[in-house]
Amino acid sequence: MIVAERKPFEEIKAMIEGCKKVLIVGCGECVSVCMAGGEKEVQILASQLRLAFEEEGKKLEAGETTLERQCDKEYLEEIKDKVDDYDAVISMACGAGVQFLAEMYDSKPVYPALNTQFIGVAEREGEWSERCRACSDCVLAETGGICPVAICPKGLLNGPCGGTNDGKCELSKEKDCAWTLIYNRLDKLGKLDNIRKIFPAKKYSVQTTPGRRIHEAFKEKE
Amino acid sequence: MAKAFKEALESGKFVITAEVGPPKGVDIEEMKHHIELLKDKVDGLNVTDNQSSVMRISTLPVCRLIQEAGGEPILQMTCRDKNRLALQSELLGAYILGITNVLSLTGDYVTVGDHVDAKPVFDLDSVLLLETIKGLEEGKDCAGNELTGEGRPTFCKGAIVTPEANPIEPQLLKFEKKIKAGAEFIQTQAIYDLDNFKKFMEYARQFDVKIMAGIVLLVSAGMAKYMNANVPGIFVPKDLIDEMASAEKGKALAKGIEIAGRMIKTLKDENICDGVHIMAIGKEGKVPDILAAAGLA
Image (cartoon, rainbow over all chains, first blue to last red; front, side, top):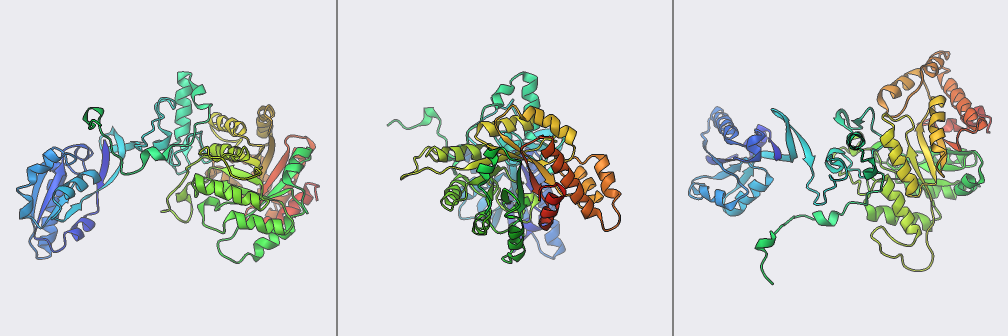
């Protein structure tokens, strides 16, 4: 899933300076699961903003709604009758959701409440870790299901750097060295030959932004 | 004038290299002094590339200064700050200046240095950089395009290894890839335990590559303890720490020079490896004393 965290409160508050009515829109997908932008977080942000405005002797009407997801037009349309009533919209989706919402309601200021961080997994309750950089050229088949692009800060493809120590990363003793993990996993699988060959340089051409994909069945016939 | 580094390597003599660290600023007097002091005493002078991810003068112009002074420069190249276009154009530029010794390094991560918010590049890695150099020598860039015109560049290609890395197996796997990718010489991370190093050399001798042991000058017992605790792949044995600690007040540096000299002498006399790379971090002016202590001056 996409993992995100809420921006500092003061940053969000500054965005809506001068607004009297804001609509806070949560997203029911990834950011809801990682406890950053779901229904509950919408409630919390709305209450915090109302209180903060009140303390300054101002009144803020903060509307709350959480959509199934914000990366689909069909769900974004559900708020089309509400948006006009507000001065601004705060999206609690990932960066993709914020942009799609802003595109659909382009006459309204749309502000992001989250910083989108990475594609990752839930390690345990309340803790997520990065696993994929969406590089469009997956090497997991050869690296024992451990991604050197996402787990190694340098994204090295041909083995560990000299900074690794005791199986940990040069950046922090808290981080595992991706290449020690890969080596150990392949050793266990009896497939160390996978990484004895030299991996070619990554093809950055396939990840030129903005990415776009059209499913075969939906491609227009020539 | 120093003999060509490649020639020295191939001659079978015990090869000695040292380092020049470009400063962060344009006052190059001290660096020029070090170049002058060392150029005739060593077979090559490595020029570090934004060492420890701290922004400094770039390597190529400093290599040029060494060359103009009559020394033999070794261009260090990390993959941290340049993508494959920049690395290759720098290599071609180095070649036309007659700078042909290159040491391929991954490079420290950006956040360990003084520009923590810079974009880390790492487009290639140290293995792929060696392959890229080999490609240029064969007349092709790393995208497969032919180099134009007459002539092909040739380089003397080097890389590094950390013999004390833990675990060692993934490190050796990469070491072997570096050799496969064309490394002709290997400078090691600092070594202090000669028994451990001999074991590494027994393994390394099976490959057609020159191994130069890394010698980092100890300046105090505290430095040795600090490196043991904080620098990956460096292990200073207890007897050396005790020896450093036994030095009289104000004599620790002299003791460090004595130890470095003794190690170099042993490595040479017992024919353990093909040479040494001396890293006298911040004490470059002491390299001649180390060589004298090794009986090489």
